[in-house]
Image (cartoon, rainbow, N blue to C red; front, side, top):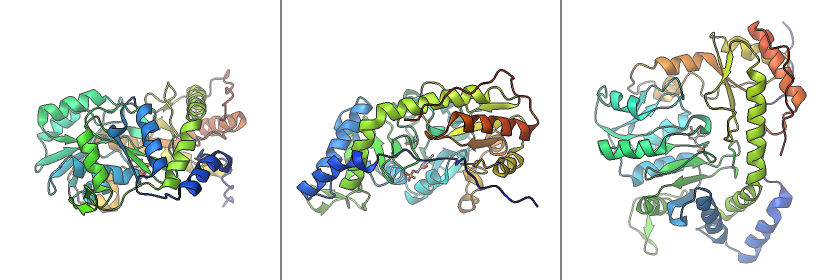
Length: 383
Ligand SMILES: Cc1ncc(COP(=O)(O)O)c(C=O)c1O
């Protein structure tokens, strides 16, 4: 058997602020001697992050992770424990873990072929197939893609069901309305602090409740008025967040240009398309491709043999994760198709044009596909 090549083109290399950019913020922590509990850096980070969404600071709260943001969004929106939370099967397992932690049961439904996302139309139809009371719906913005946020507010108004949006990777695209939007600040996201999360909504009361839940349910001083836990972001996390926001315009441009370069290069391969909307005007840290034929496993192996790492970020779909096998579901035709036909390719700001060329040529060779002869991979700018 041929020896496996070292994977020298990695699937992801997070772009986080480096020590020099952090120093001024760390000095402020040293001076203030304030380390957590909504200190000055957390408040400044919240104000700037809210401004990014063109919202007031009261519309946003920081949290210890995106998963915590989802759990607290469900709890703050009073999604009744013991009911079902309708959610797409095409998502990361964190979405379903959060549903369970909030006391609801995941009810997996399918996504639209055109967007890879749950839509209000699919949700409407699935309500009639639910095996119990649906207490919440959790749409997911796949890999940070834009969603119709207003349509989800309309869905919540029409049905009276709480909507909590999982836009873990959607810092660039989220347009929060009243339905709370949970974002992840994990290092692998476009804006990362290591581990952290944001919850954003125009419903300021809901945000205040989630904030209280993240701080032992404290309200009016040290009275635990609500049954909460500890899901706060530390001042150190906020320091990284502030430095990340300083770099955001450059980093964003880097990801957008890289996405455009990758989409253009991959378009040259027959039988391959990029995820819907990828390579347009929004920043993402993942490049997923869709194959015409179900060749994911073979392609992964072939790429690994020439030093290219690839990943099935959402594996076979959330409904096939062992912890969720017993959860109810509808027919999942599109999800099953995506699970068998998609693969994420290396995508990070250190990716060089020669490496992108190597990926395109190796992918085409694995698929036995032609590559458009004129393809010359555009230089990918690395911020
Ligand atoms: C779709 C989705 N939801 C939720 C999460 C959880 O975010 P975190 O890792 O910050 O808890 C992730 C993380 O990548 C995700 O991809």
